[in-house]
Image (cartoon, rainbow, N blue to C red):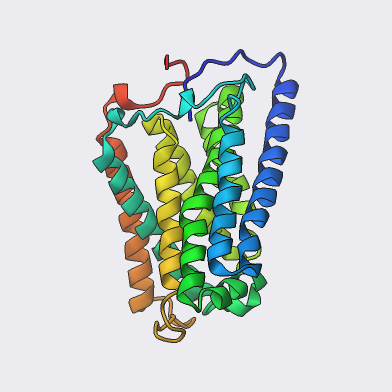
Length: 286
């Protein structure tokens, strides 16, 4: 992503809102269409499905590189160059670790409120469970979920959508709107409360893009989260004890709370140690 490209302000607030709304609708529709195409792999043999997912993702990526996410001008990849020298790969790795820890704690707390999640209640997740029963099916799904899908979704939500909102309204609305849209395309899980997880992951991805000046840390975080979900698909059903709804205080509640607090404190410490010149400024030159 190239979040530092100056863009002329909108002629009026109303025109800016229409531009943001248009980008929002376009982003959601684009991700739904592309992801639906990718997950046609579920009706194919695993090897063919993996090749299909790669072809769909590659086609999307080639198309996406043709235009600047905000101005619409034709260009080829200039805004993708890494800028991790601002914070360093180690900082990014810690941000990924704290985000994953906090969101897993959030899942534990959600299950304490809702009770154990019923995967069969979500046809899509039930189909994933069925498809990944074989090693070939799992490898195809892991490839699509941990590599192709994060690439598509990050370049749409943290690329095109967040760039548009950033140009119109600034950093905080850009992170919030792109994260809410990212969460909404994940509707259909075992319980609506789980939408909090992609919301938090989306906010962390947005923050990573603004802090580092590169979209690749967000792709890495998204891929790490999806990769862990793919690994969990290998765990035999019933081998992990899921906490039942019960007392407000117990081992599961303490574990979930500790993970959430650790994730939040980890991010706060990382941000606290960023020097002012390393923070993102909208008027900063590329």
